[in-house]
Image (cartoon, rainbow, N blue to C red; front, side, top):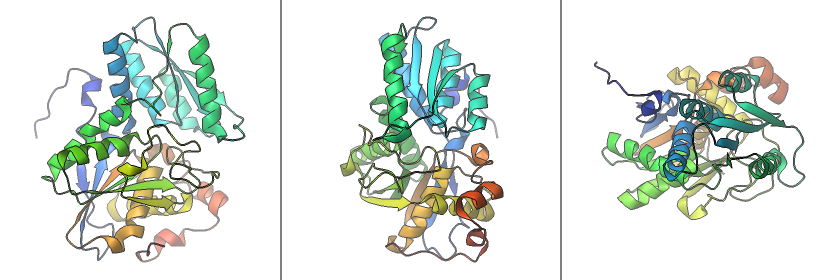
Length: 334
């Protein structure tokens, strides 16, 4: 197959493959597809978000290469996407992370020469995310020529995912019956839902949130997996954009990641596993013959020390390997 030549690494963002998962749920009488966002150049769906925000700011003159300083909060994937894009455009980048950011992600940021600030103490009300945001506001107010994209409120975040959903629609000739998308900033889900409404697609949008997240209400609780759920409700959140919500625990996400690897040979990230778990919980409500699309935000290579580490899993959940080694049984939604 002839592959096209693109003028820059940033032009390889998007147009990710949609992969059918024929072995995932035995006996399931619908088709399941995964939108494989790990194939973006820095490895995640956040490349789309980062490029959308930075490109708009460059076009408006808010960002000037060689002078402006990008300041942002991220738990991992957006930081890496911004690191690549800022390096390409010659923009200084200060990233505020927290104590849960993995050594692997910190090493990648260091390779791109990102200036990293680590928040160690959580905010009493909003946890580590609120503490990170407080520090970003301080930096934005004190660093000369600072620019905060603010992924949590920037309309260019969801706008990037109009294209994500357009790609899905085109691949399936408009027959997208169910879309399962994990939530954190709400950008992916909101952008996809925007396109679904504008295109008049008969798609049920299922938001996949983490147990312990406050996005759809409830009390905050500690979470182990980054990039899934939030301890502060993001300004982009809009419950009217979601038809159904499924909450997934860290353990359920880990087990589904391991099942995904065993059944489909796909090394998925934590939030990818969460969407698989959500489909498993929701499966009895899906009519036969439906097309179900799961958005897989990233790959599992950044989770080999956590989700795919037997030592880490035992330390946090006990001996649970039987949960992904047993014959599969679909769970019934509560």
